[in-house]
Length: 312
Image (tube, rainbow, N blue to C red):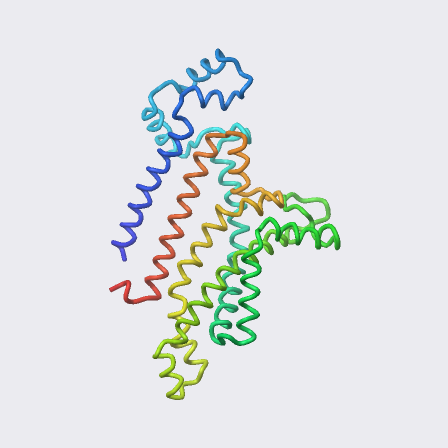
């Protein structure tokens, strides 16, 4: 186990190093381009040359990258031109908001998907199975944007029960719970459709294994067959998929955050990219890769915990 964790942490460090260099090189390969992005297209060439010299952007790329990484290791990720604050302040603030939204959604997605997927897999081809399969297919097929607009049309415009934005700012007569309702509903429905399908397919496969049929033929109670033999094996494959949803919930909910004006990590990255805020884009890319690799490591650890053959 220690060797596995150590190998993955080494892989994490190497991946972050490679990604950081690629993102840095793409954004700052041309020294004058950075100053031009910061000053805007209407700045004169003299102003661009002066800022390039003041910021040391005329130094070789590797020297600037080494300087950037040295500061990043001490927590200095630069200054955001879009948000007018140090990058570490805006990025942790937005990441915290997205983590809160992701935590609520993950706490709902996992039990709902497991309950529906297992129930459908236990009764393959039944009415319950077909109903759950139809539900998961429909909600997973509808784009997040369309689902959000559909809900907003009903609960905001027509009924007036919920706010159309989730800015996390008090006032307006809307509580924090009501502001979370629509973003959470859209993410949970969209994401759970895929997870339900994965768990159902795995449960159907396990229920057809010879040892399950043998246990049933020997007279073992159906509940004991499910809890004692089928459930653990049915979750081996979907567990990695479930953990990978954390990566989606942190880095992939740009559409939902933008649609409901939620001040999260995905919306911050979109605004930084549109505004050409290089410091935020570089730091955000590192955070997104870090989250992706950590969720992969946790998924592999859970896979090992469920399947003894992997640990051997």
